[in-house]
Image (cartoon, rainbow, N blue to C red; front, side, top):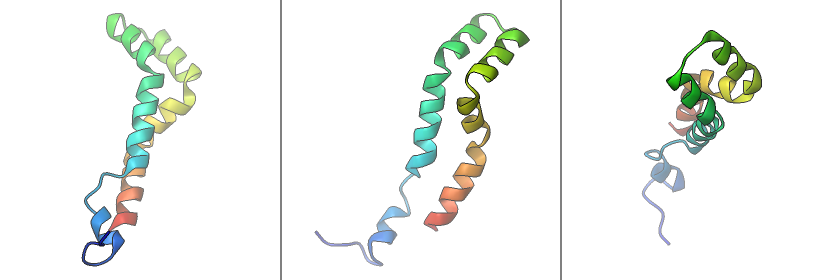
Length: 76
């Protein structure tokens, strides 16, 4: 197996950072039912309940821009 010019790191620069993508997909999967309920009939009570019961998933969604900046900076 031959490495790309510049070593193993040069080949990984074009890849999408997997950690933010994985966290985003898991958070959306966790919130899937609540998002469907809110799409049918939105109330602030359902929003508050979704935030309260899925605090980690909501936190991951809110911190996505920071995660993308962090993981892109490491790859460059």
